[in-house]
Length: 512
Image (cartoon, rainbow, N blue to C red; front, side):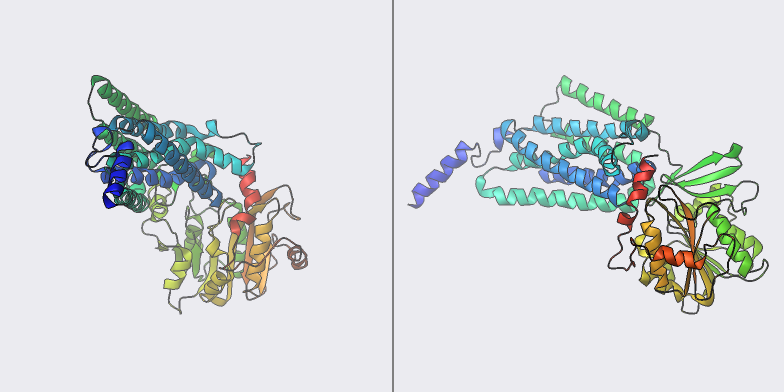
């Protein structure tokens, strides 16, 4: 019985072309785990840099990352299916080499398409989510699909016996997963800040080209010419691809726009305006929300008096310089990206002798590092925009933490960009009311009552003492009536749907 069973097993192996001791078609691929490791690492590198490439055009939000992850996973799924069929029909190192060369070529095409994403963007009439999916699919679906075809072929070329199937599949998958982990950590922690996204994409194309060259079983004149052509194409795309960033950090694509004949410098982080600097007077407050801040500051704190302040977000450091010039006291700025601060020093005239203290950390974490006796008269928030908001800085828990570092008569002012449905603005103010005695809304002339078809920048002020009735302050009874309307909810750490509340803003931005 045992001999008969063994005979059937050997016949089954032979029928599948998997006789003991021989890989399919006699082509043995050495170190298949290395190929799986590098290939999967390249795929995760592309997935991470996708967000940075898309950010200057459509920003970084929940919708962006949802599209990236979904498109890449769809590509991998389709690639695995196609790769299995290819491995069965045309197994061999020549096929594997061709797949790597195609992957290198399509990865390099990302550099070509990303030169001007505006030219390939979907029509503004398309839904916002579809616009994001379109760009993501156009750039990353085909490379993800091709990279997904490798694993079935590597398994096919490594499988010498059906009895070793589990070990071979486990070994290849483990190497691929390890490559994904290493690629993720290297890219997120080091590569983007060291080289920038376009250099990384060119590097990925080069790595895939090397895999294609080493997996080729025979170096013919045609194969050498093919590799040379791909090398030239990748080099050309890398040379022609110009990054819109002056500095590319782990957080932002940082650039400058000159307006009013170059007298005003506009700081752009990704695709959003984050500050204006007057080249003749860097302390000049230009932004509308900064002027609203100034109304409260000048009413409560006469110039020349001591004002201790904590500021959430440094940006162009215009407000810190204004406070430094007209008030005494301690200034602390929590700017999460040290590259933004360094950029302000190098290009936006922020003196290195400034008395402003910068904590290069998230504002919530920065507050936790302060001593219990470190309290402030004024807290200014400048970390919100209309497309993406750090949700953990909007909740009841954050406001309670912030309040422990405010003096009893202190004031917290935050700029909020909202429009269309104003759902976030209402929710944010309701949340502040859970912690502060008086919560008021400040608007520019002509923006109240709110226009349901428009949107603008507002300042929300909160304090435990009655806030002053400055010219831009909306009357209390009107604010109460506004907050009593439907469409708002208190935000807590366990439920803070900020991206959903901002969906109309995201859609409107893409339609511009």
